[in-house]
Length: 365
Image (cartoon, rainbow, N blue to C red; front, side, top):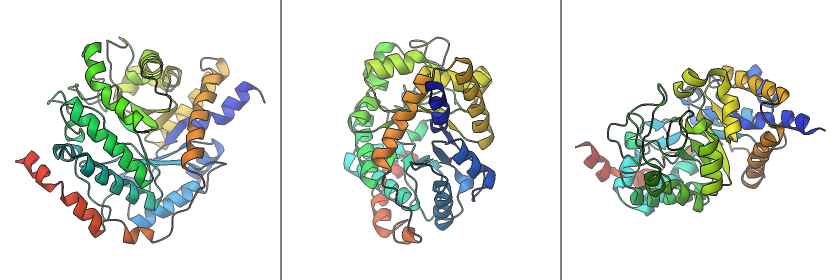
């Protein structure tokens, strides 16, 4: 098999797709298996109740090849929690950070991971490593653990360890730091004018600390940082990902893009975006909808065929993803029907969350 043919066969590993509904449609199942996708990302409209969710994930995993799929979700807590009751309602990151207790942060993260693992989720796109340095930030707000680097870094290390202890892979976000913006990248392209010296001493440190705590996944931010790249947001910037993240910070694990359907990307870069993201150094691209992920897959196939995308780089990303799967998802253990009944929202979990309540009250009064 030629290098190009092998890259074509592994390309799907670099895409995670969302899809509609609470059951797996036949055409979605076919796309997952035939394209050899890396996995799925789940949202609120994929969830009705824990038994349905566990069955949906079982259906997804039945489409797998030699390795399980990544089954991912954004279950941060607070206003970003895709699965509702009877999952334990987690406090926002700001409330956890306000406790100034890595022990409490560790336990909240472990609880989150244990509950996710019970239904078959193996990746949580959390923790948020952004430092809330701009109070007018419309997208981060109480999703951040604090306003100063030291506290955020200490809490991040605890959250990473807690999730790993609970059996789920955490993913730090949003590199190189989305905290000092005044626009929401879901709707616009934020610009961060922070000096490089400040980025190194402040924004980057929580990611470095989290990585040293064995976090093997990192998500990029769709933000323009002129100190790094005057034309491309971090997700699409070779300097941000290959030079700063890989070379300077020596990060060697998996890089995920943020949702590639956000307007910060689609409104400015169109059909070039998936190719640019892979060229920049993203290992895996996230798409909220199945239609967009199918289109991106076709665009990437064409880019491989015409040489705009290097086969060797695709293979390197696919191998990085597959290696992590092999070490974290094997042997694959299907979810046990009904196991969630003793775990989701159990008294011990509710008691642990209640320890954050005083801090939550302080933030809202």
